[in-house]
Image 1: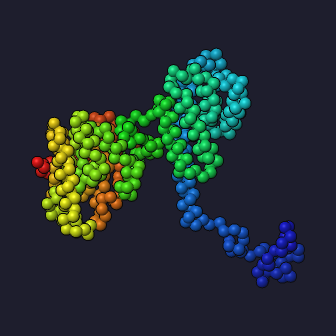
Image 2 (image 1 turned 90 degrees about the vertical axis):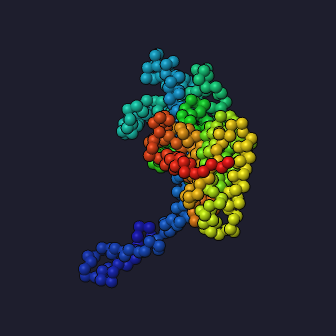
Image 3 (image 1 turned 60 degrees about the vertical axis):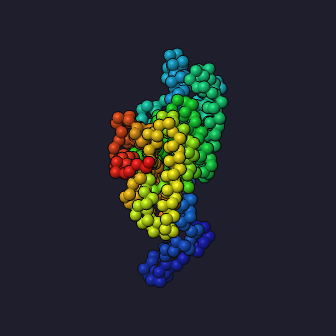
Length: 415
């Protein structure tokens, strides 16, 4: 009998209890049993792995946002309160700033700091201070207690508190490694971006008014050149990045493709007219509807002969009507090319660091609406934004911009 009252399985036949090879009183070892015969199944199936990876991805994104917010809030608190308390209290200025109301949580932070010192958890000497051990709610308490000190630097106290309230749910979920829903993650990202903007740490990328910089892009964007988003089709692109956000307020639009439906059919002629009249420049390069290349494309897509060429011709006529209403037609140029189309590209403000590009490759039996989409941000160098005269040439944006210029030079104007 085993210690738990269970009978031990017998050993090999040659090693029974009454064998001469086994000393009296010895217990035979049990033979190994199959894993499935002892206890629950430990393997994860495909669905389980998918679920945990999804959880990890969401928690990782949320952690990056929370980390940025906490570091920024810590820096703001230090910049505002340190000059007030440090001259009198020295290194204990955080304890003094917490006052009687925060005595309990600030002492807890002091204790955690001491434990971290003893166990060697302080890897960076810059973190060897009480402020580094305060949590987001405690940093918030310091702001609220000393709001008159922060008021000259922060416009709306209510905006700060509302954003921190929204982040508290995410912070608790991430800290306890629980499931984070996509809706809560989206809310946390919006609240974090808003809070960083209020605290004066908004993105310094000029194109953020058109395509906000994501926290993950800001940290690891250099791993993917200047690609900031990938969508499986144009429907998903427009769901995340409406044409109004893409073309609205642009000073320059260069577009190359077969029919340019993304622009022509989704952005009104009135808005294009306003864009050109306000000093912007538009250059549209269509595939010639009378070329042999468009006939080959019709055969690839398996559509009726002349169907695609008529659609392209209608788009060109529509753009001609828009151009005819301009006082300066030179601000709105339309040209056609006869070569085999390889991709469609929309370059917005592509001549500077404010540029955004939407690019799709043409697939043999896939319409443009269903083709994968790349979104590029110009002016990224190692994940950092550079000046327009120092633009990084290692990304994809300059490649497509150069290809557009070459195609434009070889094309013919539409009268």
